[in-house]
Length: 319
Ligand SMILES: Cc1cc2nc3c(=O)[nH]c(=O)nc-3n(C[C@H](O)[C@H](O)[C@H](O)COP(=O)(O)O)c2cc1C
Image (cartoon, rainbow, N blue to C red; front, side):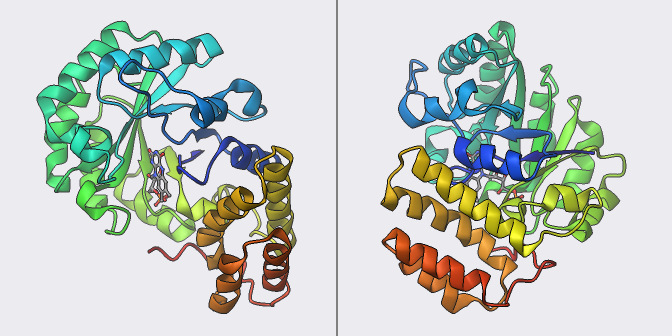
């Protein structure tokens, strides 16, 4: 089975991906958090650095683009092709209130005529393979058959289905029945995404979609960076591995010159999920969140690792 790491803006940056790939090999593909170009397809700064091949050595990256104008998408794709990428991923799932009203992300699902026009333009001119990461609908997963009819008009290299509608944000239960209907009906190969956090949740998805061969892991893998190995039948994450991973991550941020405050804020984002490996560690999590200086942060993390609260079987609890 192919197991991919989902894009998570603010978490799975190139530094995170590189450290993860070094500590936990076995991810088939990492997807970049979205590049949001301007109307002409320009993007710069952190978004550009994040996908530069030299910042993504020793892992396979698929860059993702969030935009509603085909011209901008094509301009970014040309740059990605020049960097040596063979595939670009379209974000048709972002639920953010600042994105959807602009008909971007999940907002692309609001008007299927515009979606069709966008894809028609992109597929007639894009030199890269184009994959799509979609939700099952905007207000309801019942919208998906009509959405899939549009997708099926195009040679999408892969359709990643986050099995929720936009209204469900990240909280609703994935609609496995709607996914089960979509899986065989898609012309493009399908990847499942949504709340796979352990073997049991993977088995449950597979019971709805026998024959499924591709799964994308997000928050569950940030909680448990060894989840790829665990799902392949390997050993559970050991406390020492998690400690080494976090200290390498911190080192990588500091070595990249990100500065103490920025480094701490990025690491707190990771702990938002990773804390679930330490049930009942609310007080210790608070100390991490309170830390403003590196020495306080390091002391709080060290206290957590020595607390005895680590549970190798604990998983992302969902929130
Ligand atoms: C903090 C955060 C940032 C995310 N950023 C992106 C993004 O940049 N592009 C994208 O397609 N999805 C993004 N997602 C959605 C995830 O890729 C994934 O579809 C979602 O979390 C469901 O999978 P999971 O239940 O395995 O986490 C983000 C999710 C979260 C929680």
